[in-house]
Length: 427
Image (cartoon, rainbow, N blue to C red):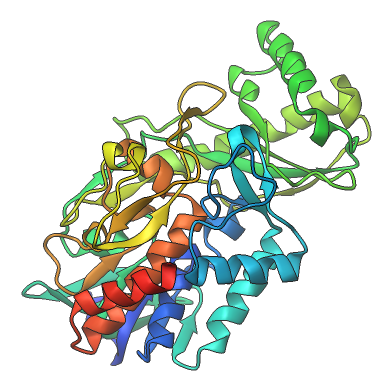
């Protein structure tokens, strides 16, 4: 009988100070922060490009960069530091400007190719960051409470990494969960969405909104021409110039009785199966779409919530709603609670205008692991708090904090010093 050799014994180890897993918004920020702090960094990304859901799911807008303000005429950044730097560079490359939408919320529209170009440039400028694309983590090894070996497949070749510190930016707390960290499944909290782009749409539709479209969809659902889920169509703000319109179709939250991998597979297949009848209906029944053409479909569904750690601290709903500050705060959150559930429109829960809450560093630290940090939407938070903290702008901030803290820990420096530095930078 053939004996299977464990993945971790098939290749030599590659050492580094900080291993960042996941090259989305949080991972880009974490790798850049650790590299600029002088650490030797390896960044693993499962796609052939950076950006995570910002590019693969074609999200199209960055939320969480600017304070909510119903009266001001210009966007006010929630803080300085890397999120503001990244946004400024994205505006230069893509030409977009901050846009005010409902209830005084400001967003930054972007094109996914521009986001990927800025991410490539930022990561590439650091001589300390070694990027490995098409890489997925398959196994981790622990020694006491430290993650000392991470086994990955990079373009189907096994690689072993021996890090001093790890930053998990996978969006699903993959490495932390493999190491045995306590976590909870948040997939039932939020509905995912599929983004697609149409060309040759009446340019005035973006300004008018989708009221006429929703009326037509409602009639089609009522007479059985379309399934009810088609009423969950929404505009992507700011992407509607020159007749090119981005739309997102929200599905229903996960079934708590199903395995997440099964649910995601079904989501991907079912959402794409809906696109053709939905697109044809719009062309045939809504005047603004009469000459429209389907230009692109996001290669991945936008999953808004997944597995998250139970950390040394937990961001609570009350802390968000009461804009609580913390002496250990390493990131500022300013986006309201935005829950996409069974209703066609999101449930919004706002806090005070021109204010923000802070996320303590211990929300990025699994309780059981000494040298592992997380960032992005797998940080430790209650359900409502996560519907605010999950957005791209806040993910850039938590990623920067996690990368800085990991570099300090790898160098044997106190984490309190990292917090002091991060708070100075974000102010």
